[in-house]
Structures are given as structure tokens and as C-alpha cells.
Image 1 (cartoon, rainbow, N blue to C red):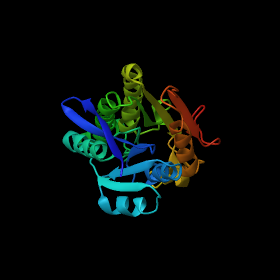
Image 2: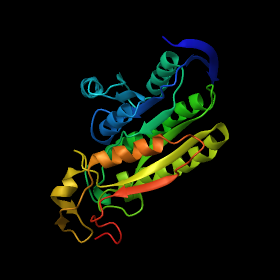
Image 3: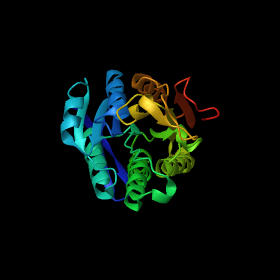
Length: 265
């Protein structure tokens, strides 16, 4: 059992801090895809990883495969739930060293005139607001815990730079995440919290495999696109996570070499 030595205050909360060298990471969207692969890799690298997501069964299954892990249900769009889970993690482990925001939705591709408002709202709520809520809660903890500091890594997309056709909500959400990353990086640096973003292009997951079969192109055709193994994404995140908070990686892009990005279409 850890030895409790001091406390860190965040807003009106007080956290006991145990003496332990094991770093604690929380990953959103950890039940599948990039989140699951990232959580596994971080655990293999010695982090105690908190797998979070809306559905408990896949979280429990995924966490059972990792050497240092636990599963906690958390809806990133629910501010109270996000605060509660992060409070519980810090109360139990004494500190939070890493947040990786992997939770995200792509949605149904529709021309802008046919975009459904409810779908727009959901994608923005998960991709943007969810990233904000988790990052806000983590920044509060990391900026006041003892020792102070930590790292937040957001998952972006090359779509924010070069949009896919008929994907306005996803494109807008990821472009907004880029702005969010810049704002958190600015405010995080004064409290030793490094904030950065990894922009992904066609990682092979259930969400993106539709592009491997035939992705809609600007000329209206559908063409298969190259993808990168999700393990390379997880490895890149683990590489960044291994750096001390005094080292910042503001933005990085990881994509399949042969995907049509540099001059899409």
C-alpha cells in the first residue's frame, strides 16, 4: 500500500497523494480502436491505465488484457460524470499523470444541405465537448497536485486540414479540437502541463475501415485508401507519453504514406 504524504487541492477538492513511482494514465474511448490499443501499449510501458468509455463490458474485457489497468464507465459528454471519475481516480491513486482523449465519432457522411442537426450536435458533443470536459478536469488536477504537472494528448485528424466530402460535422469538430489544444497548451504551460495533439490519417479501426473498402472522393467516386496499423498510433502516443512534462510535442501527424492527403482527390 502507498504511504500518504500530502494533499493537492483542485477547485474545492482535496486529494491525498501517495508516494508511488507508477504513473497513472486515463484514456477515453478505451473500449475499442485507437483508445484500446493505446491503453494496452501504455500499460505495457508501466503506466497504470484507467480505461474509460460508455460501455462497461468492452472496457472490462480490454482492461483484463493489460498488466496494470482498471475499467471505469464514463460518458465524456456528461460533465458531472467526468469530474466524478477523475476525482475517484485521483483519490485512489493520488495523482494523474496522463490523459489521452481518444473518444470520438465520425458519423454518417451526408452533403451539408442534408446534414441532420441531431447528428451534428452529437458529433460536436463527443469530439469537441468531450475532449474539453476531460481536459478541463485533468488540468485542474495536474496543475495543483504535488508534484505538479502532467500531459494531455488529444486525438485530432488530418480531416481538419483537408476535409473529406460530406463530413462537415467531423471536420468542424476536429478543427475545433485543434483550437482547444492550442488554448490548453497556452494555459497548461504555467502549471507544468504539456498539451499536444496527434492528427491521424486512416488508422485501421472499425470506425475508419469504410475508407479501406472505398472512400468517397471529391469527384464523387469511391476509391480504396491506404491505412496505417493502429499499433503504430499507440506506439507514437506511448513515445510522447514517455517524455517529461518539460518537453512538449504540440502537434504531430501520423498517416498512411499512400493515402490521398497531400492534394486530396
